[in-house]
Amino acid sequence: MEVQEEYDAVIEQSRILLAKLFIPTLLVYIAYKVWFFKEVELEPLPFEKKTTAISLSVIIILTSLSWIFQTLIYLYSCILFSTVCSLQELKMLKFKGLLEHGFDPEFYFFKYDRVIKGLRATSHRFRFFLALILTITLIGFLASMYKVVEAERNGSATLMASELIIINWISLCGVGLCLRSSSKLSHLHRRIVKAAAFMNARLTFEKANLADFTLANGANNQDTDDILQKFGTFFHNQDACSRRSALVNYLSSMSVGISVYGFVLDRFFIHASVGALLTTTWFILGRSLND
Image (cartoon, rainbow, N blue to C red):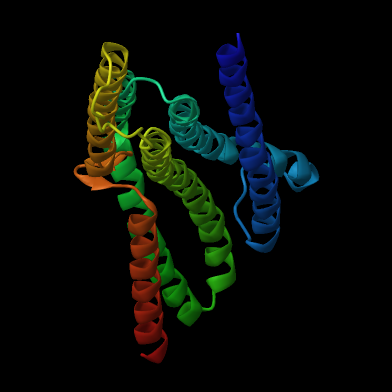
């Protein structure tokens, strides 16, 4: 029941997030359309001047329907991906909590292997979508800068920039949400590796203090049995330590997270991409405005 409640909470948060992203953007877009049709003369209009306000309202609604449909589909897809990542994050957090109990390493191995298979399936299903929105957002952002610079020379930069800002804002919100959800999974995997290493060190140090195995002269059979039992415990602890070390090595060697055609969407990838985008933006604006 607790897991089901957490899943329901994640889905409810996704619905709230969709409303928070879409409703303010819709209000801004409608305000822009009202301002646009007031500033720009559209003649001849297919209606009489007496019904201008009503007819303009109809035109604004009709022209906004396509935008509403496209925006909802885009944001819903991004939030759907974010929801799937959040559900995977819950599984990883549950696994991290199990590491505190110090169970058998084989149990952890097969448990986390199922988590990794789930992440691979998610990456395979959404890799084309992620690659597509990243490419479209990048090309659209650079093309928007070029259009704004060209419109500035023609004296219509305000009208052009207003709509482009709304479009690019939606694109950046969707891409940012997807990248943030992906990077959280990679960061959580590193925390799991640290927790596994801590568990291995804690259990190893707790069981490292062994009694003296020296067999004194004249020791009876009871003392010999005790020492043999201690040797058995020692070798058992050594075997458990080796198994835990193998688990830590396995977790450390894995590159876990959402990947797009071989590129893991972690924080390094995001920071490098944002840095490259800002550098390209400054270069294009500098060359365009100086011409």
